[in-house]
Length: 426
Image (tube, helix red, strand yellow):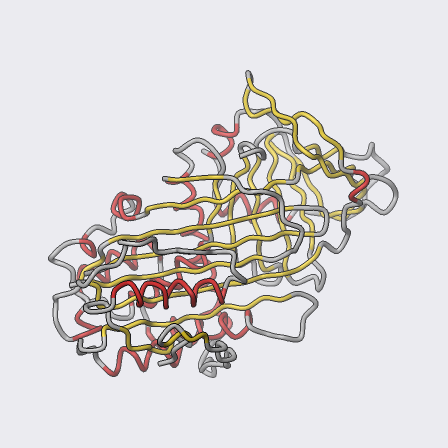
């Protein structure tokens, strides 16, 4: 697993791409000529029900915590988008059969009923792509298919109708490098150039038959922005024996009112972005041993803490941080009991009518920047297949040691991004 840190960036956005490669038509670049991406359209969600949408959101959030439980085993910063990974695998699930489908469903908890799952994903897609908001948030899907390989029309129709993923014919066999650049260029265009060279040279080959991509992008500002002249270098305890200097943002005074709660284990702070649709929730353990806190981190606990949030005065100190992450997730998903999809026993006959396809590799890449104005983040996934009480002292929320953060849809609780800051300097 590769992780690295870049410099601070002032703009505010979140971007993400999930990619599936299968081995065994909208074109954005052709003959190296750049074309303007077509606008994102509304897709078919007329059969979506509130219960169905909640079932998909709950599935996504449980997968988020399950994956976090696996990724936390490695030291350092952590950041990924469960929404992107789930969406990419949902498109894969649409073509899976038998044991392969059962294992994917068990890991991602997708609703089994087509008439529940499909319109629910479409409804979430349409919600994320609304344009009448004070922030920018969009998601997009696309398929890249080997031009002489026969896929089932029904499969492509399903993906386009319910996921908005149109198919583009490419040539992995004879023009692998050009195809790699076509896909990478699409990724860049959908992530505001935050994810570059998602597929390095040599990462695609002539055996690839299909690539499925999902991208999500967010640009917004805090409802209550931090003043840059209040940011000062302060200590951040990486662990009991190591401290680093970080630029610590500060909000105090009568206007510093946030949703807040605490118990004997942690402090919880929620900060909204303009538009009051999305927010960042920070979970700060009261001791420096984040591992013991992470072991108790469940969706039920998160929902419990959210239910106890009340607006109150809080003195807030949060470090600016910027880092990127890259995860090669094949082994992780196998450990989570999704192994058959990576073997010769895989059954993706819902894609092509044969059992010749299997997942080759899974890669997820992400970027996040938190600063005085708001948050910027990007991510990419690649899957390869051949209330007010009596007056009390003002709480101090000082994130000067490792913490967990969640970027979510406040209305329905959908976790779009999940991360851990172990060291803001990396």
